[in-house]
Image (cartoon, rainbow, N blue to C red; front, side, top):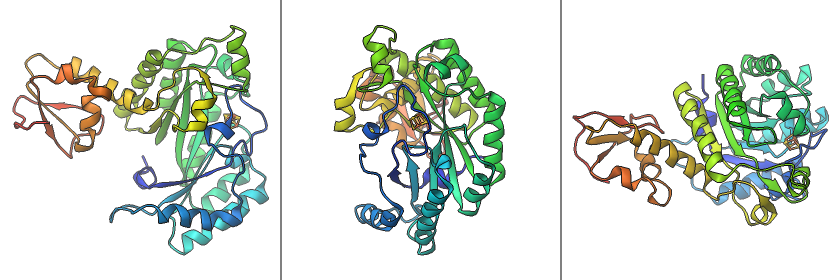
Length: 339
Ligand code: SF4
């Protein structure tokens, strides 16, 4: 089952760039992606959370925020370091400042005792950076081999320990094509994770991927290819009830300065959601004159840069809280409202 609380809660990121990584994937530079040169220490967590919450007013029914350990592989940190973070989190949880924590981790190198440690610490979600289920792509990306059944076992073990399992995938690594991506998506849907994050492969300065690209040994996907592939994934996740937490990297000046090639767009996630609505609008029967979408989806329906406005001409649009986000509901009898 999806974990609505952890998926809805506001996130307070704590970036630990490359911490817990025993290898470096060819595309990765977490110092650039997270714009963090000097990672936070456990002793500074309370101050970090206070600074974050002071700048933000939460809605009355909003769950307590969650601390998120991103940018490295939390579950593969030394046990004593994990325990220090868990103690810092527990103190903030006890005083009602946060509702717990989530983390990202690589899928290999898990020690048996970590599951119990995370369970006792009320870890709410672990997002596994899978990237692809194609062994050739993983090998070329500098990642160790891991089988589907090992990943399935890992996701199930997390679930058994009361931890919501999430998956992160990357489209467009060396060796990727439409078939490998579709196979990765089919494998992911079969695992039924609660959440998914989608990233396009970007060529960052100083990475091995940059060297491959400069030598002509790698051609990143175009923006259109990346949007289409991620929109396919988004549609499938909506069908399977998997929450897509994010598509594309967080924009920042540091990141922009380091991207040398690849399907970059500051509003990548918005492009994908617009594309998903465009596909549904194109598939509407010609007799349909009224549709309904969730009230928060109106701008995605209209599209990035009003890209879907041509398909909305003559259609009446109703805002309906009951419509699943990402979907269009159409009935001939929908009441008349305007955008
Ligand atoms: S992609 Fe993940 S596992 Fe690979 S180097 Fe980056 S943070 Fe570490």
